[in-house]
Length: 339
Image (tube, rainbow, N blue to C red; front, side):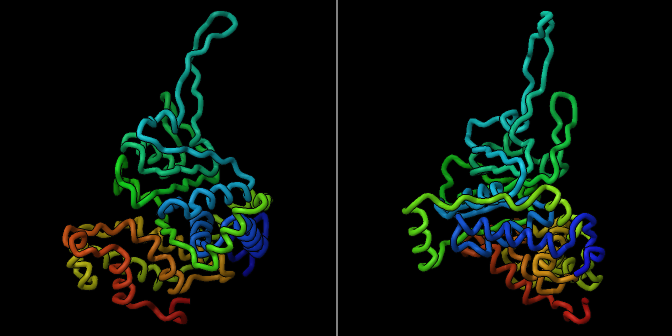
């Protein structure tokens, strides 16, 4: 793959992909047995999107994000979401200062959202009013406060964690905020061999020090390369058909959609499918998107954008089997035709 084809002016695409490989290696010094999760986080990062990590406690969700931040030369802030958190704790607040001449003036003190990587830990523990403080930041990469709009540093990523089991004292994320996350990543239990490795690594000497191998310029160049990666009209049509098939009123989806879906995904899901697929192809070293790339990212893109109805809840049907039925129902173009 040539740098001209992928649109990366400063460094070759090959060197940028190699930087991502080194980044993955550095994260692996601390995180064992979550390779697919780390890959999806990196896809979201190079696609310029935000990611929601959902999993039970103790699966290294926070450690993964902290390790990613340590391996990147980017400003990192962690926000621990609690029920008493208020919007100004995230965006910042005005304080009244007195100068040496006795004059008083307000000064805006920027909150932790003014960073390259923001860890929103246990995001569903804060009330909706506080959760909404992130909406403008996630969509527009800016914050409006104290009568002015301020740009956030680039690149800007929100990586949030959520515990799906403990629901007491939590506030489910509204659909408008869920839609701002490029990926909904599910973190599962490790295998027995991986769990033994975890025990060995965490109960002995201190873990290995992570070296910063990735810069802000690398991230911005990769985002540019992802945008420039070619994607055929057939694949754009395939992504659009997948998204439209999630909507029961369209009548183009499988039976599970008509039976169990209340609301389907919106146009932002199609954008996420294409950007995620481009990131998947780029990180695999390929110069064009294939149907397999769209299928690879369909689950993290669609699982939080499909709203099951009451019948689905009663029958214990989640979004995952619905997405699997969608992928089986909507025909994919052949790789040769879509190249």
